[in-house]
Amino acid sequence: MDVIPAIDLLGGQCVRLYQGDYNQSEVFGTDPVTMAQRWEQDGATRLHLVDLDGAKQGTTVNHDVIAAIVSAVSIPVEVGGGLRTIESVSRMFELGVRWAIVGTVAIENPDAVRQWCQQFPGRIIVGIDARDGKVATKGWLETSTVQATDLAKQMADYGAAAIIYTDIHRDGTLSGPNMDALRELAQTVPIPVIASGGVSSLTDVLSLLALEPIGISGMIIGRAIYTGDVNLSEAVKAVGPGRWQDVSPNGGSVVG
Image 1 (cartoon, rainbow, N blue to C red):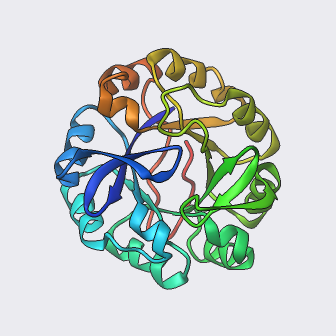
Image 2: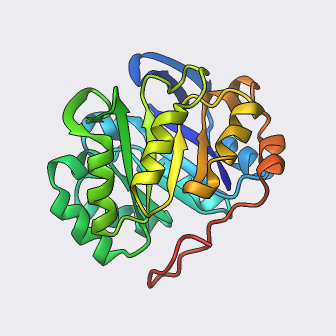
């Protein structure tokens, strides 16, 4: 299972939001590149970047920072936030990003996501951010009427490489993952599910590891590794080596 450090970019800085609230942000670093290198040194096998400015504005904003991080580390990088057109997705891949994470567009234009999955096999991940089981969009500023499980099934049918599931009420709160929702989602779709939001301790890490047999293939950790509640090196050692393979330029499997 992969333990994936999150670097959330807002104004070029590393921040964490509380329950996705842009008005409740806390800066954890002014140098995202150095932070990325630190997590790689601590054993991370991939990085999770979110362009919070991009998610809010609907187009990628932190291009230069993302490019600098990709160039500074040797591990693969996944990026989300504001990826709502084929041009923005293609640009991420041109920067050297391994996986593009799409969210809002999966609700507003699902056929586009299907086309992107066909054009970039194994490289499109769908981020499903849920509030009370309903999918939130546009940087979590709006909540749709679509059930997370319904969207996950549709995106799996369309060829998504994986689902990243975030429970907004847990994100940035250090209150533990929503295990019931993760279990339901993993049992609903045939593709890997990556857990995000709420991990607060090594106990949470091990609880998620116990769900690996039903399809939870990784976990994204944010605030807890910045506050020290979770030691990344210890977490990586606890779950073992990551199970994700490289993706060739021509596509291919992302799961070992």
